[in-house]
Structure formats: structure tokens, C-alpha cells
Amino acid sequence: MMTKKILVTGAGGYIGSITTDLLLQRGFNVVAVDNFSKGYKSPLVYLQNKYGKNKLIWYQKDLIKDNLEDIFKKEKIELIIHFAALCNVGESWDNPELYFGNNVVGLQKLAEAAIKAKVDKIIFSSTCAVYGDAKYLPIDEDHPLANPSSPYGATKKMCEEILNWYSKTGAMKYVFLRYFNVTGATADGSLGDSKNPSFHLIQNAVRGALGLAPFELNYASVNTPDGSPIRDYVNVVDLAEAHIKAADYLLKDDSESNIFNLGTGAGNSVLEIVSLVKEKTGVDFEVNPAKDRRKGEADKMIADITKIGKVLDWKPTHTLEQSIESLIKWYKKYPKGWNN
Ligand SMILES: NC(=O)c1ccc[n+]([C@@H]2O[C@H](COP(=O)([O-])OP(=O)(O)OC[C@H]3O[C@@H](n4cnc5c(N)ncnc54)[C@H](O)[C@@H]3O)[C@@H](O)[C@H]2O)c1
Image (tube, rainbow, N blue to C red; front, side):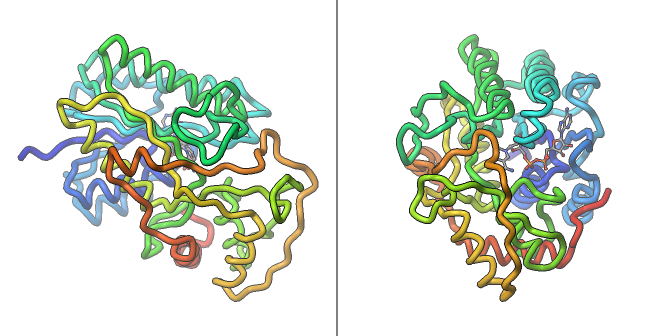
């Protein structure tokens, strides 16, 4: 069987680098594209050393400013996994034009080049932020998208709509993976989240416990049993595995465009997470509650993962404890994350 070549955008970032690792491990060839505005070359160099330079090729390209057609002409791409985006919810409130300009235009430019090259399969990184406040729990894929919780969430909804029209016109086939809260690093701590601070509670709590950065508990009182927001935390390696399953699904001739939630189906409160991190690290670090509730912060978000289980045969395999252990390894190895 011919080795399949996958184009991974945003491969220098947190989730992109870890998914690229798993793709290479499973025998795919990867063509990576990143402008390195938020991501790093170092994880790609690490992966080239691990798997060979012929298995992973990378291009420093911006989805909006650069011509992507050359890449499609040169490389025989069979499927795209599109991670590249800006994803800081707070920043998207301060500077929504940056988010519409990068995330929506970036997807459109990528799709334009792909369609021209007759590459018609794409896995798109979406988010539970497209749902806005939960009308019911757990949230299934049919939950209304009437009110995304932030300009960032709105960009993801717009991207979904664009791809949905390309699917209707027959130009492209998609899988949308709507991630809930992503956490953890690879089990050996070799690849992880370099955002400093991270946008993620568990990452920041572990960094706080290890004394790498002050940890500020960023929540305000909500209507849950302990008064702190409840979220569904999915391990990043489990998440990467779902992308492999989605790729196998899309590469089948008879598959149809589809949408899947990607979470665990269980929720933990902010305060539960903080005490688990204290327990796993053995550090009773100081917690300073933040004053303001983040804009668009929902009380409770939990995924219904029945569909992804049935159609892609995917289920989470890592516990929260394992995610925290992997983060401890990652931050001990790379206290500041990648720096170039
Ligand atoms: N981390 C999460 O919890 C989470 C949750 C839901 C959805 N997502 C989505 O998953 C994807 C990956 O998230 P992440 O946490 O790995 O983010 P990240 O910032 O670590 O990675 C994103 C990568 O995209 C690159 N990029 C951004 N704009 C680009 C452009 N115009 N051209 C080329 N490259 C560009 C950045 O340089 C970076 O390497 C994003 O689409 C994000 O919206 C993440």
C-alpha cells in the first residue's frame, strides 16, 4: 500500500506537533505548514530526527500571505488536518478583527488552494465554544450553535459553515472535531504546550505547582456544587488518536462529511482540578482567585461522546492523573516550553 501523505497546518503548535508525532508513528508521511507566529520549529526538528527527514517535510508559510498552491503542486497530498489558528479567547474579545482575519481568511485560502489542486478531504479543529452556553448536558453534536461564546468561537463556526458549503457543492469532504478542554503532553514529556501562560487551567496549575510561574485561579463563582466551573478535560494524545481515526474514516471512498465532539463525557470542577494537581505534585501552592469572570465563561460544559464512539470507534484512554503526570514530565524537561 502507498504511504499516505497528510498536510498538517499549525504543526509547530501544541496539538499539531503531538498529532504529527502520532501520524508519523502510524506510518503516514507529513507535510507541515506553519508561520511559527505561535508555534515552533524545534518540535518539527525533533520529529525529523526521530522519524527521518523524508517522512516529515516542513514549510514556513503563512496561510494568508503566502501562496499555498506551490505546496499542493509539489507534494501529493491526500488529506489535510487544519490546526493553524489563533486560539486565545481573551485576545479574540480585544481584537476580533485579528481572529476573523487569521482564522476565517486562513481557512478560506487553504480551501481555495486545496480545491484547485483537487485535494478534497479535510479534518478541521473546531471547539465546544461553537455551542455557547449549554442548553442541555451532555452536549451532543445536534446542540444549537446559535450563540458561540466568543469571537474566537464565532470564527470556528464560520469556518465550519464555509466547509459545509464546500461539502454541499461536492468540492470537499470534512470531519469537524469539536474539542472540549485539551490537556496533557506526550507520556514521555517530549512534546507539550509551550504557551506561557497556557490558556489552560491544568497546564497553568502544574506550572504553578512546580514553581515555574505564579498560578492565578481564573474563575468566578458559578452555579455548580462547589461554585467553580465544570469542564470536560480530554488528553492530547487521545485527541491525536481521534485525528488518526478521522483520517482513516475520511480516506474511505464511501465516507461522508461528519461532525464529532471530542471530550471524555465526564466533567471536573476547577477546584477539583486544583486539588488533584496539588495531590499529584505534593505541592500545596498558593491559590489567588482572579477578580473577574472571563467573558463568555459557561457554568458547565460536558461532551456527549456517543457518536465518535460509534462511528470512529474512539474512546478516551488516559485518566486525568496520567495527563497531569505527563505535564509534570514535560514542564520538568522544558520549563519554558520550546523557545524557537
Ligand atoms: N488547545 C485547546 O484546548 C483547543 C480547544 C479547541 C480547539 N482548539 C483548536 O486546535 C487548534 C490547535 O490549537 P493549539 O492549542 O495547538 O494552538 P497553537 O497556538 O499551539 O497552534 C496553532 C499553530 O497555528 C499556527 N498558525 C496560526 N495562524 C497561522 C497562519 N495564518 N499561517 C500558518 N500558521 C498559523 C501557529 O504558529 C501555531 O503553531 C487550533 O485551531 C485551536 O483553535 C484548541
